[in-house]
Amino acid sequence: MDAEPIDLRSDTVTRPCPAMRRVMADAEVGDDVLGEDPTVNRLQARAAELLGKEAALLLPTGTMANLCAFLAQTRPGDSIILSAEAHPFHYESGNIAMVAGLLPRTVADPFGKISAEQVAAAAVRTDDAHHANSTLAAIENTTNRGGGAYYQHHEIEGVARECHDRGMRLHCDGARLFNAAEASNMEPCFLARPCDTVCFCLSKGLGAPAGSLLAGDGETIRRAHRFRKMLGGGMRQAGVIAAAGLYALENNIPDIAEDHRRAREFRRALEAEGVRFALPSPTNILYIGTADAAAATRALRERGVLAGAVSPGRIRAVFHRDIDDAMLGRAVDAFKATLAPRQG
Ligand SMILES: Cc1ncc(COP(=O)(O)O)c(C=O)c1O
Image (cartoon, rainbow, N blue to C red):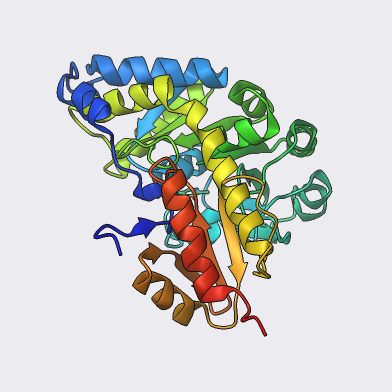
């Protein structure tokens, strides 16, 4: 067994490559809280351009990017429409309720998506003082708990139309927006266009150590900037992080297609052995069904592979740029040995 395990727990485990570390070391920096870090300013301008928005803001995490988007576009006591599988509903420590003061109105879908019809059915817009008015909906593209599902462009437009017709706004949690762009063969700016705000993470498939960008119109991003400071997310010489982000946007986007190819090959090889997948896996996230996920992940670890037991009957494996073809082959062997139904 190799000393270093093959880590399929998440694409957040990617590490900065030597060339990325060099640009970080050499980054021109200033005090970003004063707006004086030239590398941060360049990254924010680049992100705004990539997403076709007026302005963008660098935040330490995707969690803070979502939260600042929510705070900037709602008021405490409003309601937000999002999937019952959405990352902010499950994995952001209840911040929608605790910090933003929002009532989540969740809609059900195994792939973690929301439809125009669901927005229409869930939205509350009334003068009746009994109700929490819906002012924002949030989509996730791609979805984390929904197996890396992505939206077709017309689906995003449909959701946006329902929101805008009701005077609501639409946020896109694009933690993996570049995976969505690759899978749907659409430029990120087209996926972003129907949405009022969009964020993406540098720290996942793009391979940077930290950072997320939130983009939108100038006024909304100014409001988000204020909330970033309030939450303690104003970083000083953040150009060191921004340099990694610029490097990632310049160099790493094309490799996402390779992550998707490896995920497809992984699935094909295991399905041929009778291994059951719990959801479709159109991008880099795979959910595998098994009777005892905790026991299976322990056995995988002994075979040199790390995967997540996300529920008693589900294992998650995520492909990313630190997994090459040789590691894919070893991961397939380990999963086969652990999960394939025994012959004879
Ligand atoms: C869909 C989605 N949104 C938001 C986040 C939050 O990102 P961070 O871990 O940078 O806070 C994640 C992290 O995995 C995610 O998968």
